[in-house]
Image (cartoon, rainbow over all chains, first blue to last red; front, side, top):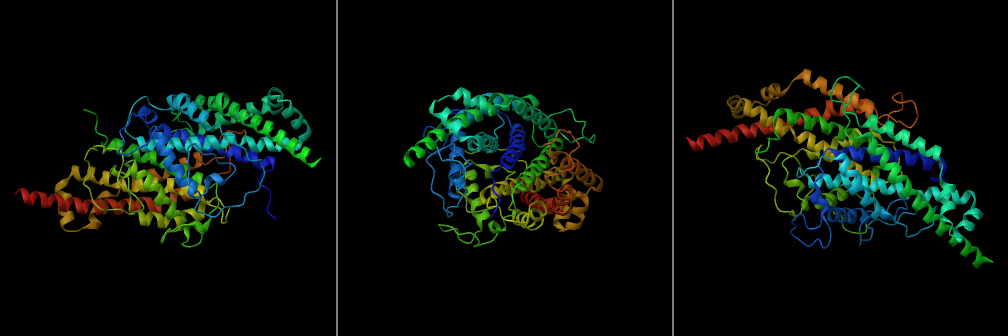
Length: 260
Length: 260
């Protein structure tokens, strides 16, 4: 028997590792200009039908089709941004059934804050024609953010298991506020933000000069990374967690009713 | 008139920036196990024809088809690993014609050393089933390495322009050794390796604990990054440069003959 990948310690270390991936992706994106035309419908001329999609959405869809074929979206921690997507060509993998499947997907909100609030703070406000490179890095950042935020389902499931009766009661009462309160730990959130600040400071250094560790030039503003979590990633994760627990509690109650 | 993107200073800063991208990609890849089956033909069961390709090659090909459609490979600094690829659906961009087009492409050698020499030194020797994630990170690392190494053409062109007569003479004499000697600057190479060591040390830190900058746990071995450049990237770049200059000198000579 292999060890469960879903102990709270392992969930926590996945979340911490994803912080690095998100910061790396933002640093990588920031080397290119904003290139606003890739986020505007109709701003780029295509030789072919792209329907109602802007360049990033078109490119994202094409990329997700490839990823879907190698079964990315059969994994319970991966959430697609686009649709429709083809079936996998690899045989289905059996994943440990840890979370209860549901339709919760906040990728539209992730796309929205990423393009409107994050990009303008890390990119030069110009057009350097690197449309494909910019979109490639956008996709990496968006996929990592999506994984981080939807990972709330795993955290929520592990909280549910620690106290099912309470969460069933709150779910049936639709008491989102109280669930949110149970999920909130201000001290832990503060530690996350401090760790992000350290990571953004260290990973964002330009180390081209010889004075190791003394570089004052940062590739992205440290505050952007901290705010990204404070204003968007942490609150959206909580939306996912609360949605998950409402559904989870109700389903558990219904299952118990059926058994009684 | 916009500034030329091909001054020696700008070429140099592109090369330095690519070091970060390569290190980030290796760090990202190293979070997954080696997963040797993705590099072996026939090791994974596909529902569909993949011809003679292993999983990485299949996934790479599908990814490059998407990138080709958004004209990645019309850029003079991008070299595809797979073929055949579709035509772009975006109208052609006019690039400054700085280098002379040629067929020099060392991606097969890059794939070879990456899979055989780099991966086993940064990944756990096991199978964690993260095939798609591993291949995605492989593709990022390979594309960045390919760009770095083929960038030698731009450096070679700028050397050619500084002394065309000499390079034409050496090209006609097929004196690869002497060209290689002209391109080699041991002191500069030593500085590159030292900078890489600094970057690998700083970017590879695990910053999960609170002792900022004192982390002793590195996500990839520093020596791997230094050796990657010393044994592979720098020598292969020089192969590209010499090949380029042989072709460049001969073409320049032929053009002069036609004019005379």
